[in-house]
Image (cartoon, rainbow, N blue to C red):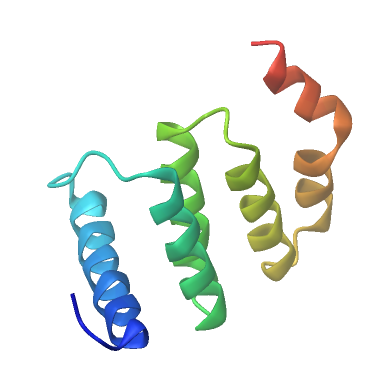
Length: 101
């Protein structure tokens, strides 16, 4: 392990970006929930809203009950100027529908 935590984070993020690209082509089939969160944050910070949305979609396909990924998806929708969809996702009604599945 490196002495520099920032370097370790950068390496981890680069690895996740590589895995995300592989996921888009079907070469990778699974990522941890936290990995999707990290990717979404990275894409939003770098103004890559379409990639952030795709990461949220893939994440929710794999982790359908993740409230954190639902909130991240709502954040992406706000950036994409889709407030109605974001509001729906964040609504209590929709959240309780997910919890009752």
